[in-house]
Image: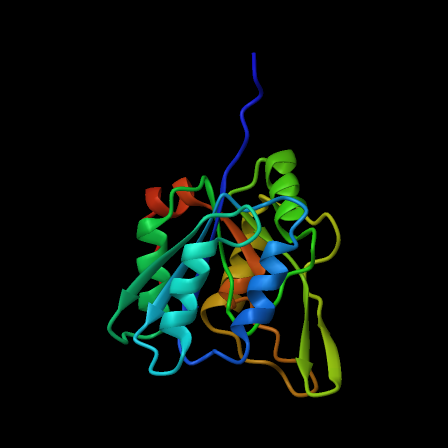
Length: 193
């Protein structure tokens, strides 16, 4: 019997990011585990993003199929919701087009999700501003919890995080540092506000 292969959809809200989109798409093409679909939601961008998205859809990214949804500008949250509604993967990740992915992004996140039977996988990243690079390290290696108190504390950092003096602003509200089980999002009617 053939082993079930989990599927992953990458969703990108695209708006005025023509200068960054090629680097992001190249990083998706370089994945060691190809995503099953890449959904580009052109959120009414007035620059070259719409035609760029169409070219990616025509050629694909590596071996990953690319779908484009064009919509009137409604903001990043609405674009992510549009992509989520269209997604077919068992797992979804929201990638901002001004970001890039390490080559093992899909493979490592999906492997950890399956191994730990998680509904949500959070991971660290890097921030770059010009020549300055700083870590976005807040979870810790192989962190897994179903502890209610720990989850409530984390939830507070997602919903309403106010850093204390001297504490770095590291809320957990960023959508791009997570892999979500799509059935979990659907079951709980979770959408971006």
